[in-house]
Length: 450
Length: 162
Image 1 (cartoon, rainbow over the protein chains, first blue to last red):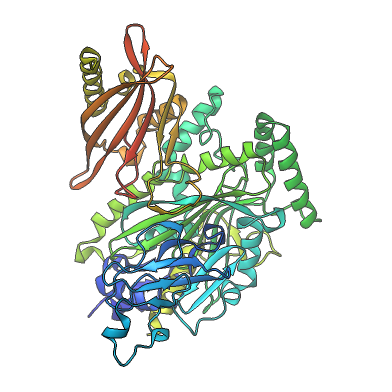
Image 2: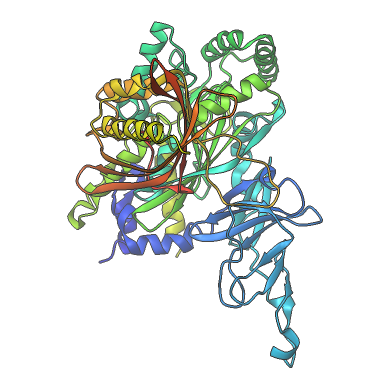
């Protein structure tokens, strides 16, 4: 009996029981490459990474290396980074500006849109001619831009991105992640990347909904130092900002219904306690910062007129399957966009980039970026402790006999919607494992589709 | 004519620093940093053509932030250093150059650091350091360190000093 045939038993998301076999089994891993990564819309970057014709980045969709490029007409393409002739990678840079891509093996050359432009010794080597129009770089089936975020899917039959995100998911994305009504976000170029032990789903479910680990054990050393330093009046950006400590935490998710793609947000704050902190911090940063946080506050207050419980910010979130988001509740912390790329069943790589609110004064942008790389970042005070946990989980779950006793995801089972009503999706109490259950529900649906 | 005495003196200091780090004598290590020390680790990436530079580094610490990192590990709940990493810093290829118009010197060195954790977990870190040393009370103190790790994808999260 293989793990793959037992998934319906091993992934009992309804009862909050999910066996770790799905994080270590090779057959599950190979199958999910096709059924999960082959069918979902995957985050591949941001339009500001390819700001002008000729600019490109390289990234991954699952294990597949891709190029995200902007052609001369300004159109964005997502191309499989694999020469049509012998499969060589045609672009080896992380990002750049070029007229096209040439293969290092036999010199086939491609345009920014993947068109095969040149074959060395073409006329002599292919006497009867060769149809170059059929030999361009493979274009990923569908590409879409949502609020600047670039997504692509290998599945030509996938629903359009907007319906995949859903009206509910888009509402939260627009308001809390992309700050569309506040002038949007500005990219700080460059991917920060690190290898991590453990299956990619461990990181993805953590961002989806695991608020519990933040203050119970994983990050208590960081929080402890924050509290000590603040008491002493000793300030360092990531230390004086454990925002949300005086607030009521909530948990939100959209796409929780069967068949829908979940979007989970953990540690949502819907009171104005963090605004008080932001205001005090802005006073330290100067009058421009004060004016900006006040402006932000008034825009939002107006948008949610009549409600006392409007969402001020989110701590962490996950977009199915492998994107993580962090907002740290406050606009005085930059926004983190993370990808958890699978690297075999038992390892993944985290790739992340940073954005700040475009209309923020420079003094805010600088400190907001600093708080990103001092915190949930490869050398920050937060992320290395998460990596450490994944390494320990791996060690303990690899033995065959340890793979079937399920992990427990029972928090707030049956209480998922007991938060403020009237918002898209469901809002419930925090800490919660409602979002993790939604994550594995959809993962199982895709795996079961065969 | 190279200043051999100065070079030897600084090589000795860098070797002693490496021992302090490997022996986890961080309080003593802090004494060799100036109050306005800057500890920077730029992002390494492969970039083609004329594109915007990286928006922010991996690390840009001042003294307070370095102290915060040490304070975090001292809580006893800093899991990435619990149990503590064993490290071995090998520092080599030290060259010392004057900095025009300054009494500080530019010290370039290469390093190989092996980090061992728990039973079998490990990371190998290699790269170059560009240090600025400042003469203070008859000795040298570290005023700025720029760490260039030879890695685009880091082998694990960073919880140690280079």
